[in-house]
Length: 69
Image (cartoon, rainbow, N blue to C red; front, side, top):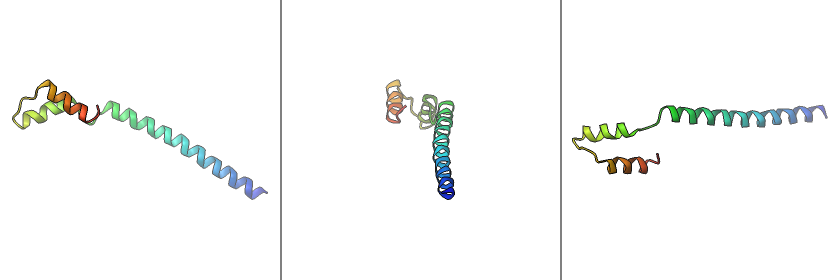
């Protein structure tokens, strides 16, 4: 009976550890994305200017919307 109790505690600890690490990692990842967004409107404007074009506000909004921001 002592072996089964040890196995049960090990499995329980593993499940609890997995849940805690999932939420901690999710929180850390969301914080990093909020502090360092993948691309901003300023970056889109700079890319257009490098291509030799003056972007309109509608084009910028369209690109940002298509990226899901």
